[in-house]
Image (cartoon, rainbow, N blue to C red; front, side, top):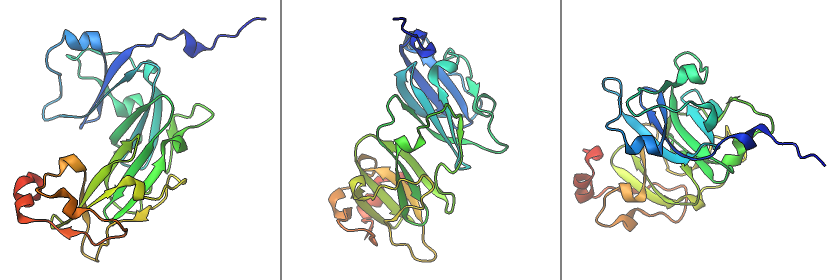
Length: 242
């Protein structure tokens, strides 16, 4: 009996670190290179917005501002030095005109969920496996709802506490287990924050990112919720509210 060896079995696997910049440059750097390097080389006024450590056989999922997903194997991306500006994603992924990558996820097993927070107070919770395909498709359209402005994208492996802020005057704390999962990627989500006509959700933070003297004051057990007015002392602790 002859065992057939698939191509990916011949690919070397090792730990690498991925970096995404605001100007859509992407770096894949080995840990050895990181240890022997200095500061990152970036374009003027560019900044690193995401950093993930994973392995060379992982799959990388990029989410764009046009509700598209681009998928690529980590081993298909050439390694660069920290002193290199990196790969320009519109060229690497063959993206559309005026399209930007907002967020990326690295996975080996497609476990976990994507959380999409919208300005109208709704949140869509989509299993990551919804983006898994039997054939090697590099682009998926309608990756999330584009009916309302997106405030934040977040990948979670397990449920976490998050804080939603409305117009910098109200906030609510909830656990993502309270959000009903939707199987359809383009789902408009579940109504979480009761929003009046001229109001909107302005921020979504993890619990520890919202500084508060009494964080549990903002917790809601039932959704949708109108939230709680942000305490004056908490406004002083969180610079983004000023």
